[in-house]
Length: 184
Image 1 (tube, one colour):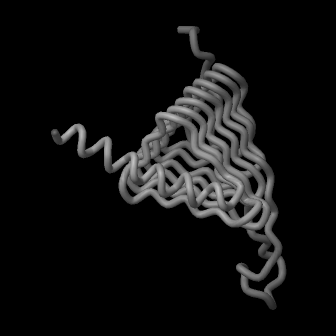
Image 2 (cartoon, one colour):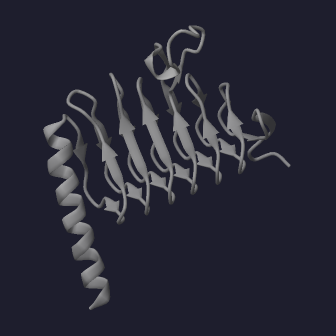
């Protein structure tokens, strides 16, 4: 009985978000799980697109501003309290895992003009692209303009400031490639 109730409540949450996102140009596929406390904040022409089998765990925030776009392909999992904020585009390939408390932010504010507050200065945005079958560990941060290749792994707490090749294993602040997956 409890399993039925949990599934029914998920059905209602997904139906609510499907309706809201459709009004803003976004969409939600089949078999999507959206846990309580998820926020999908998008404006008109700034879509959030969730393909089949996406899992958004408790407290996840997906937010698009200005001309942002977020697209999560099939079977992407975003762990508790993960935040994806886009003013350009964030794309995550199928079968990728994002551990809890990860942050993906595809923009930065200018800071040069001391006569204007930072929030009033221009935004510099560049897309983030995460390949298929990628694992981002807990508290990983991925910054604007980064591409992470297919089957890469990024260790917990890393800050990714530049591209990572496919099958790489990276750690640190800033993240550096330590080895390739499949090698010992």
